[in-house]
Image (cartoon, rainbow, N blue to C red):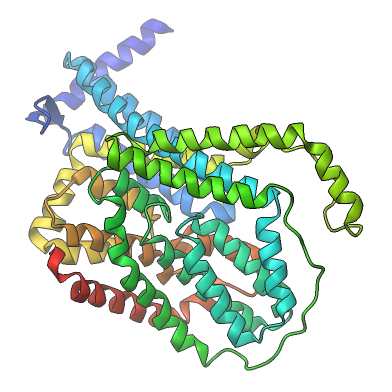
Amino acid sequence: MKNIVATLVALLIPMLLPTVAIASSGAGHETLDMTTSSVGYAAIAIFVLAYILVMAEEFTHLRKSKPVIIAAGIIWAMIGAVYMSHGMSHEAEVAVRHNLLEYAELMLFLLVAMTYINAMEERSVFDALRSWLIQKGFGFRKLFWMTGFLAFFISPVADNLTTALLMCAVVLAVGGDNSRFVTLACINIVVGANAGGAFSPFGDITTLMVWQKGIVDFWGFFALFIPSLVNFVVPAAIMHFAIPNEQPTAGGDAVSMKRGAKRIIALFLLTIATAVSYHNFLGLPPVIGMLTGLGYLKLFGFFLKKTARRDESAEDVEHEGQMGDVVPFDIFNKIARAEWDTLFFFYGVVLCVGGLGFLGYLALVSDVMYNSWGATNANITVGILSAIVDNIPVMFAVLTMNPEMSQGQWLLVTLTAGVGGSLLSIGSAAGVALMGQARGKYTFFGHLKWSPAIAAGYVASIAVHFWINAHLF
């Protein structure tokens, strides 16, 4: 069997070699230009097929991480085979290790953030906020604006998916059978969550990638605050007049946060400060600060676990059903409940896009988009693409291309990649999740009906960015 495999490899590789050319990479290492080779075409076909399966997740129920992980393995196996045949296996190894390191830093960063969010959810932080909003008995129009603004301001700290799900739960609880309100409120939440994530390094994976790459410093992202706000407010103002001017019936029980909730929130803010300090003052990757912050939560979790009897005492004085069964705080349970499918999907995307870049395709795309079209047109196009294709591979491709651009242009592509996904309901994780949570009320075509209003916000935010940040171009 081994002889048969060896023979097939020996027969296939020479067929590939005539279309492979030697090129020099920016790092001083020789690489192979395989953009016109059979391996190159096969790699593109494999990635496209994998991404079609990702986009069809809602219908196939195949988790999105599975096809891209397999695609990444096949693409790098083909690259490794060709480089091995040229006696250049070391170059391929260095390239794949570089991509793996980039992924590891982002994965560990996100894992810490997800763990904190899960811890706050377990301590009923989000349930208490939802209960407070419901108990206040706000009107539909006021609730429309409140949930939108809360999505806008919470998503820079929490991820936009968690924020959108929380606000949607509020909308569904008070909206009842009023499908028109639920639809418009969900659209507003998606736009607000995506816009809020665009002006913070922690708000979206794309902004996190730009920050960790060192292209924009931590405080530099806040130049996008006003453009991001405009992106949210413009479509919200247009949709406002379509909201029923009615008063919903308040209901539901009050929810209190569990012991330690406020301290966990404080520790999360301290963790963010630690990550920023490590990066700005010590020149270390932000992930080191985030992992140090995970240590804060671990120690506090140990304290909560050892003093769990206080929770039991607190439960005795609460009304029945408000706190539920007391379970000692377990930090590893919070880690286990992280969005592992998303983390592994990110691995597949980074390795796939990195492989296509190593084959030479991203250099070709960069030349067409940033040299022929110009940086502004290219960066606006990136935002439109992110409404169709997930913004993670799109932004990672731009970062891998690393075109020569001003700070203003890098902020522009950060803005467009972050808010462009709002143009369609399938353009962001928040939109896809809400279609499932508010099934039958928030739909693809319901969102599409208001896409012109969202597009107006998209155009307005770009114009405002050019206006107020003109000195950065």
